[in-house]
Image (cartoon, protein in one colour):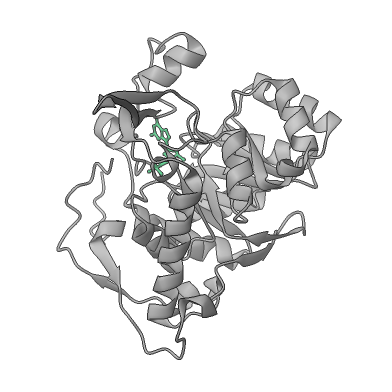
Length: 347
Ligand code: 5GP
C-alpha cells in the first residue's frame, strides 16, 4: 500500500484569478477552436462542448440543436443500426460521435453502419479505461477506421492517456467518478479529483499532440470555464444538458392554477439500475449499480442553456485577457479556495 499526499483538486477547490487585459468587450473574444487530429490529420472547428452519450442527453435531437452553435453530441449507443446509418449519412452526422463499448456486438454494429456511410467521429467508451483489453480494442478500431477521429476513455492519469493516444486515440476522455449521477466513488472507493485529472492528462496528451475531453463534474458554466483553464480541449456534459426538450424521456407536469406546467424530467446514469433494467434486463448478479436516477428541473429548449455556457466562457475570457479559446489555459492562474477536497463523492 502507498499513500500519495500531493494535493489533488476539484472544480470547487479553485477560482480563476482575473488578469490585466486589453479586451474591452465580450464580443471581442472567439470561443471556437480548430483542431487537427493526430491520427487522422482531419480538422474540426467549433465550440468544443460535447453532449454526453447517455440515454437522456445523447440524442439525435440534441445533435441537431447543438450543431447550430458548432457544438457536438456523442449519441448514446442504443439507437438501432438503421437509424444510425440514416443519421450519419445526413447533414447532422458530421456533428455527432458514434458511441460504442468494447463487446463483439458493439464492434459488429459499428462495422455495419460504417459500411453504409462515413462516420467522422467515434467515441469508444468504457467505465474503466485501465483494462488491458481496452487498449487492444482502441488499436483495432483505429486500424479498421483510419479516417475516423477516435475518442477513447475514461481514464484519469497521464500514463494511461499516453498509452491510449499511442494505441490510436486522437482524443482521450478524462474522468472517473465525477459525474452528477455517478456513484462509483461511493460504491467502489475509486476516483480522482477532476480538475487535477484534467491538468495531468492534458499535459500528457499535448506532449504527444493528442487532445483530451474533460468528462463529468461540471454543474455550472464556471466549471466549464475552469475545465478549459485546466487544459481541456473538449468538455463533455451530461447533467447540465439534462431536462431539455431535446432530451429523451418524459416530462413531468404539475397542475398550477388550473394549468398543466412542465416541471421535471428524469436523468439517470448509464450504470444505474434504471439503465441496466432498460438495456440488459436488470443488474447482473456479479456487479453493483454505479449510477443513480434523479429528477432534474424542466428547462425548455437546450439553446438557452448553451447560450449561458457560451456567455460564461466568453466572460471568463475577457476577465483573463484571452482573445481565443486556445489561449485560455496559458492565461489561467487558479487560486485555491479550499483547504482540502471535502466532498469527494461529487454528484
Ligand atoms: P455530468 O456532466 O452529468 O456530471 O457527467 C456526465 C458523465 O458521467 C458521462 O459522460 C459519463 O462519463 C459519466 N456517467 C454517466 N452515467 C454514469 C454512471 O451510471 N456511472 C458512472 N460512474 N458514471 C456515469
